[in-house]
Image 1 (cartoon, helix red, strand yellow):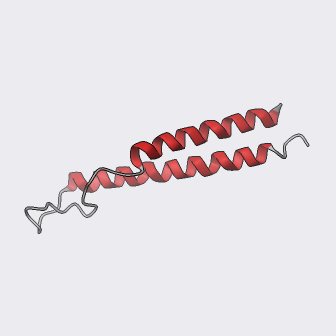
Image 2 (cartoon, helix red, strand yellow):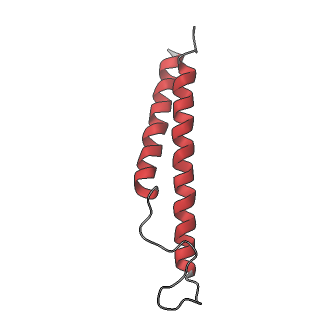
Length: 80
């Protein structure tokens, strides 16, 4: 019974990670260095913050997916 709960929790983590990847995995077109196309010497801090936000959330998504798969694998050995 414990293995089933661990497996289910792993699946939930996989779903959460996949949904985060859908939202934050492929960011909208933005300049990661924050450059404004019209003025090359100016940095757009809003773009820099947005790129960092997408990087953090997409990293969390990958971690959740890996952790979810690890829990599913672990659940196969619990209770044997």
